Each structure stands twice: as structure tokens, then as C-alpha cells.
Image (cartoon, rainbow, N blue to C red; front, side):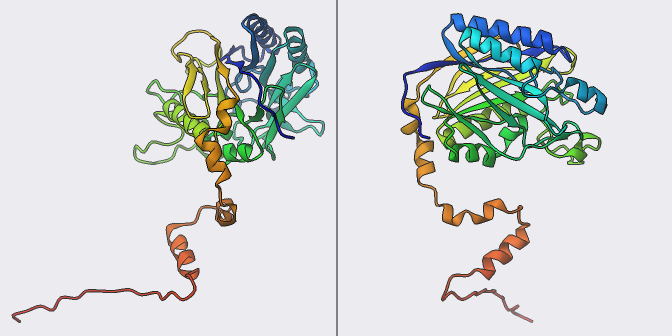
Length: 341
């Protein structure tokens, strides 16, 4: 289904400071923000990853504690948020721990739109808790605003391929909820982890900058700007924190246009949640360089992108084994003869 151009509309990001394990209060805070957004003429508000749960890092929770936090998609908290959406006329995206009908747990994010529409995304790259499963599919939904929304949670946004896949599915506005995990010990918040083994055994990289070390927040900011530009899409980023994590800095919100320009951004030094908003003009999408690059893709030569990364030697062997027809492999060596012996 294609979307037709629509007038400019307002979106907002709220880097909510959640209360750990207090879903009812977190829902009440979300509802209050939606009421405020309605007064400002905002159409969509994006809240952080796990915003209803409040836990930034669930690794040390027992499974029964995780089960207590989890709710089904039609549970009390999501129903309350959906009711607030209908009451205010403002769409909302919120994060929670989902208990699926088969009993599995997921780090999920649901976008509720006035009129009863809900779309849920399950996080693809999960290392937060061994009891939380990884999602297996990308999520997009059409809207009346002239944009198609894609959803990626936390570390889902770190990988270039994930953002590109949502763009290839037609997403022109990426909802990017996030939650920084703790601190690197030098005052900078750390990015989420990629691999489970890094939870208990730090890598010996002799001071190298890794995904979980210094500069994480700055890297993520620049990365999101690049992804918006690469794919010709708007990005609405909302980074959360919670009252129970003394090492976590307050989160921030950011809205980026299809040219990679930051339209609005909150100060990460703020001591409380703050809403930032900006106008989204769907007319900027089609003319962006990113959209032109998408149209110019040569998918016939992208086969290797779906394979694991090759070692440098393997990559050389592969190139050598696929020489063009009629070519001859040649090598040269220059040897100097010693004189005066």
C-alpha cells in the first residue's frame, strides 16, 4: 500500500525517566505527556525502550521477576496507553516486556494510533536477559500522515542493515526507542551490548574503543544522522533512563530529517524528562539523496551482504577464484644483483 503526500505534522520525543517495576505510574506519566502533546498539536509521541517497565538492564533479574514485569499485548498497561491515545487523539509508541501467548518473553515496542490501530515490534538483537527471546521480523505500518513508520528498538538501530531493511519495506519515518546501559566509568553512558559473553568478561582490547566504551552516545548520535541521510527517512529517537540506576545519565530525544539534519534535540544533561518536537514535512522525503540512492541500488550484486563476514584471506581467495573471463593472474618480483663481489 503506497502512501500519498500529506501536509506537515508534528512529532515529539519524550526521554522518559521511568520508575523501575512501577508500570501503573509509568503509564500515568505517559498519559500526562500525551495530554500535554495534544495541547501543542502534536500527532505522534515516541517514548523510550522499556518505558513502561523502567528497567534499563534486566540481566540480574530472576526469571520469576521478569515474569512479573511481563504483560501481553492486550494487557492492562497497553490498554491504558491505548485509551489515552484515543482520549487525546495523539499516537504513542511505548516499550514493555511482552508475554506472548506461548509464554515466551520479548523486549517489545508498540505504536498505538487513534482509531484502534496497534503495531508491535519485537527487538531483534537481545542480550539483556537469557529469558528474553529475539524477534524475527521487521515492522512497518502505514499512517494517514503521508509516512510509513518503521520500528527498531535499542541495538537494532546500531546495524546498518536493519535500518536499510525497514527503508526497503517502505519506511520513511523510523521510530527509534533506546535505553543507554550504565556508564563506562568516565562519565559517558554506554551503548547496549551485542554479544552475551561480554556481560561478564570484558574484552582485552588494550584500550580500544568498543561499542560499550567511551564515546557511545556521540557515536549513536552521528550514526542515526547518517542512517537518516542514507535512507532518506525521518528518525525520531527517544533515549530513556530510570530512577533505580544511579550510574545512568538522563536520556535525550532527537528528531532528524531525511537529509541527516537534526531538527530538534534535548539536552542530555537535563535532570528530568523533557519533550522535544519538530515538524515533519513528507515532501522532503522523495527529493532526498537517500531516496535517490535507494532507487539506484544494484541488488543483483549484493548477494555477499547476507553472509557472515569473511576473513581477509578468505576474501582474497574468493576474489581470486572469481576472476573475470579472459583474465590472467600475474605477479612480478624485482630482484637486484649485488655488485662488486
